[in-house]
Length: 309
Image (cartoon, rainbow, N blue to C red):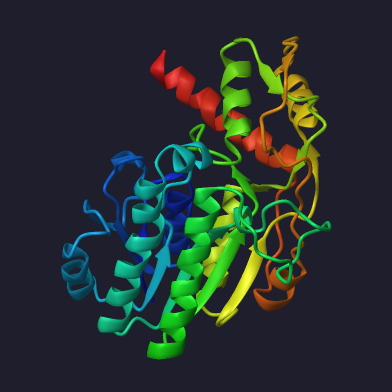
């Protein structure tokens, strides 16, 4: 298969590109490198340094002629979405419309879209399944909601097949401190550099943390499964902020103790996503426990630190 990955130089997109190549697909990456890095594009992938909002995207589709598109490119910071909702909408909604138009014009067989648990807002019950009401409490979540709606309407009017994957809190190698799972990257780098640690709230708040390699495999599975479905990608397990600290202490043999501050306004106390639909429709389940993912990520950053020193 010929697969085009938008945002393929970024955190999640680079891992998807690697997984596609491992499974012998032909891969092209489109990334403007605003947050992605050129050295994260796997060798073997064709690379186009372009912005997906621009008309040149159609030329890229004509040149590569993808059968499938995995759309990862996005503005992923909730905080930035609140500061600049117009930019957030441009990057997450308008850019998606341009990708959709290119898919239709160039007869793409299927689009796989990276959505988010942020659509659900404050959970009414746990675990949150795909039937849960959608009520985002950030502009980031709202822009993803609008993108999903455009995808479904393109399917209705143009027959474009899609799978929408709503990610839980993704963590792993190459992650920066943006996004909802940035706490893992932030804590890890502070432990490795022996820097002080801050927790907002009592640390008992929980999230569903999913390892990036498991997310990559879910995307590849969605190439041939889950047609016209919205599917959570998660572990269906809760991990508290304090648990992250304790696991990092154990793995790094550190004695760092966090400082506690008042909780952030509007912070959701607990979040966990059901993954039964992913198991049934994608024949997928997470391979990594939280601790296994942490260990692999720490090893990656430790090697990086040795190379730099």
